[in-house]
Image (cartoon, rainbow, N blue to C red; front, side, top):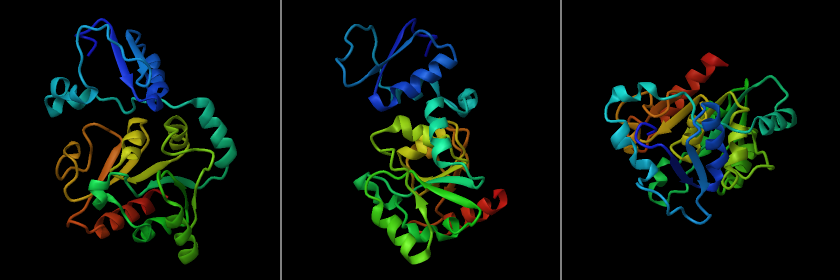
Length: 244
């Protein structure tokens, strides 16, 4: 985009402002100004485009994705250190999990935690809750029925405090999630992210691909039949055993 504009103003959700700013500073992208959307909107500009619409002009072919960086958001190093020292001092393989979306029209993306037992029963791993919304009953039932604990970091609001959630994700070794905002955040941070997709996911995940064009670090696990998560869970469980 810098080829077409001397100065760029990015108006974005306040939860993402610092994550973007840190990355732009790191790559020495000095002619961009990141502004909190909740403040008074900018009206002194020559051209305007929605951020999500840039792809139709700047990513016209698969080859154009070859320059996509492995990460394009940066969390706070200080917060990462604080969380690491407080919660993650053991040597176990640490995995963040998310199994629900708040999108009421696409509840078919959700996975019952009990169906994830082949993954969550891996004794070499600690599982960390990255879920937002209502999740207490899911975690409680899993502990009561199977003795499996998914750790919730109560210091962090996984929905409203994306800044700290990003730091938490960067303390982990892997993220396993359905198609939701956690998937996009983790992959944009450059964290190894395994994404569980329904048979007919949104267009940006393409069809029958195991890799994402948008996120080089993401690995995609797809349903073979609509509503059937068994092959997805089994594949992830087997792949997890190989690395833990």
